[in-house]
Structure formats: C-alpha cells, structure tokens
Image 1 (tube, rainbow, N blue to C red):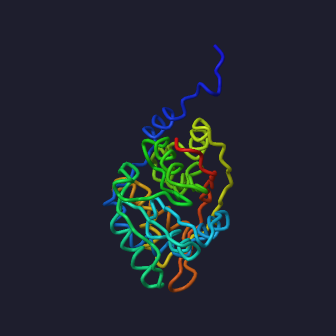
Image 2: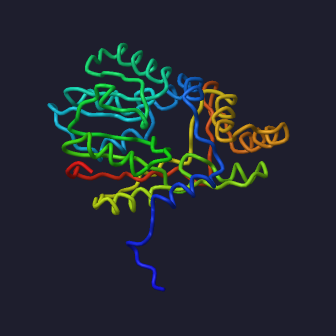
Image 3: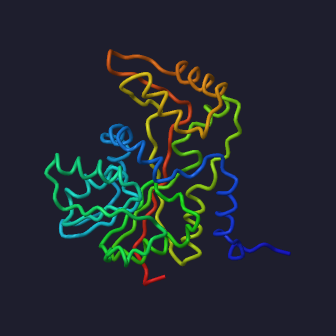
Length: 275
C-alpha cells in the first residue's frame, strides 16, 4: 500500500512524540519560581533582535502575545504598536512584565492571566491585528492552538518554535548519563499548518553558543532547570559539566560555551478565514 502525504496524521504524531520526550511540561508554579531570573537573563537576549527584525507591524496596530513571559517581546513590541495584550498563565511572569513596563513608562500593555486552554472570549480577548507565540507552543493540542492564533489575528501570525533540542543542551544529558528525547519540533508545526490549509513562511534564528552569566551559581542553576529531579549523582555530574565549560571573564561575568548552539524556527503566515 502506497503511503500518501495527505494520509499522515501529524496531529496524532505530535501527541505521541510529546509523550516520548524526556522533559516535563513546566507548570505555572514552576515558571513563577523562575520569573525573576528568567526576566533578567532575557532582557537583552540576542533572540529578541532577530525576532523583531522579522516581524511586520504598523504604529496603529494591536498585538496579542500568547505565552508572553516577563515581556521579552511584549516590551519592545509595545513601543512600536498602538496596543498590546500579554497573555500568560504565570502570575509572577506577568508581574515582572508590569514592573518593567512601569519602569520604562510603557502604558499600552494589558496583561491577562490565562492559558491556551482557556476560553479567550470569556477572558475578553478581542481579535488583534497580529498574534505571536514565541517559544510557548508546548501544548498537547497544537492544532487547536494554531487555529486559535489564526482566528484571533487579522493581518499576521508569528511563531518562534524549537528546532531539534532548542534551548536544551544534548551534551549535558549525555554527561550526566541520562537519555534525552527532545520531542517534536517545528516541522510538526509546519505540517499541521499545511494540513489546515496554511502555507507558512519559515526562517531560522541561530543563537551564539556562548552565554554570559553574572555568577557561577547562576550558570549552574540555568542548566539545572533543564533536568527534572536530578539525583545527587546527576547533580554532581551536572556541576562538573558546567564548570568544565565555564570561564570567568571578570568579577561579574562568567561565560559558558556549549557545543550545539540553540536554534529556533520563525514561522509566519497571513491569517485565513476562521478555521
């Protein structure tokens, strides 16, 4: 029997692949604990400039940022558009966003605590000119999330999705002796969009393999976040792995070098009629 492309059920494959991944989906409470450090590390991330260079907006437009975190993209986007709605299920992340917006005198951001699974109409989220979801597509119902983004945007949808291991460092898992299965990446997103009748554009954002930290402990904590419930032996190997690749540049700067640089897919399309 000949296999045809249109017979491939990418949605089912997505769900099965997610079930086999090594890492667990973080809860809102996990992100609450990480909010302050995450905000500090991402405020000047090179990722932001690369994403911003690829997105098209107009000064009178509105933007919906789903999974906005501490405002990594919401803050720079709010400076360029009329109004921005920032949606996240972590209250602490939204608090970091509000704090930074207040400090910078940005008053056109509306924050809403909510998730992909919530009824956005009940959250009083109107249609926007542009919808974005940056590194926030860790959902069970990917097709449903993509439909939502399409249906809540009039002029454009922009995604940043993981390529391969994405932010995870495969060499770390090998060093601590733990199997690593990254789970599904951007190619599932592109193909599910295709099955929905959307022919999306795809570009890639490659980050520098060097990452700077304010202290050795900050670097170790950043890597500890990748591993769920490390055992004492794994914790020892994790620390040794980080120390072997960490170099102190001065009193306040430590540089970590990883062999595989993080990479993200930038996916965008002009919304279709409601799906």
